[in-house]
Image (cartoon, rainbow, N blue to C red; front, side, top):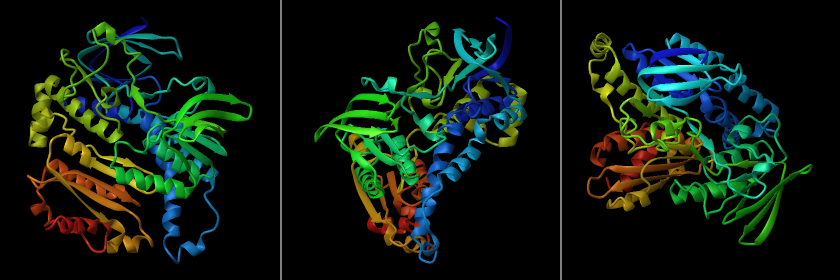
Length: 480
């Protein structure tokens, strides 16, 4: 080993989730080291959330402008792909993490570049492939794993050899292909289909099942499918990819579907068929583990020093929920291992130290698909609530019928639906579709988390004329 380092807490992974865990863990005087093998800021900053939304936003703005007379007449042409990609580069800081490293420094957090692997209890070996160094790292109190997830490449003949894009390549593209094929109808598949169609590519989406967005309400999936087709996306449902081949003319997919064997030719292929926890390089076998599971304190059972947060736990697949888990785990570590003096100081400042003994509550996980229309949901779908044994009813309302929506855009299309518990009269889940539907989600999230009955929510008066007035229409539809 080239050197040995010792810290109170070691966080494996310097993405947004790992950064949050490290920051919270350090708040009671603990020394914290972040180990990162790539760019500090992680997947969300450079290859997922930020660049994908930067690619999607211009098309959404153009569609919104076209829906407002007086502005629509001024518009000519379509998006400028070069300018869209240039703006995307700004959001990724041109794949330079210096500002993120500066933030770690300002927060008093250490950084070690390299790939971490367990060498024993509270002991890691960190190998830096760039300079060939190896560092022994000792965690005096805790290790928090925030290594994220990685894309799954299906076992299709020729697929891996065809060098397909994953979400990373799709969001970091330097030139828009003329023809794009997308495997998968989940969040990544739908968003990339939308973005690339806006940028002028011919897009074909191949889905094994009979619908998009299997985690959302069926009506939302149907609305998205209709919208994608109206954009000119070729959707192939119930279709298996049986072979893939790349040559000088592009990528060639052999498909088996309702129409028999088919062929799709494209310049590039995006594989968006799911992700799995990134654990292969961690050396978990040294700890007697073959994977990572956590309890509601984000602790790995049987290891009171080991915690995990974010995608690697398999409990969450969004940055915002992963950061929430990170705050919980960081607070637990800070309270359990921090100095008494620091605890007392923080306790006096906070007034209520109970937040540092939190457990994660995943009853209301928000999800947004930044397609067009946007799809946003939180809590349980109708089917999930029924499967959980709840007596439920749903109420829905066409958002375009609300005055604020009609002001926002001519021909506003969207739907709001609530899943209600018949016995307790609380909201179990909510789904919204339409332009900027994500902005309606936080109110629903608060209502689901708080478990506030409808009779009380009725007094939360929405401003007029806003799209949020749909809440009043939902109360009325529910019989209030």
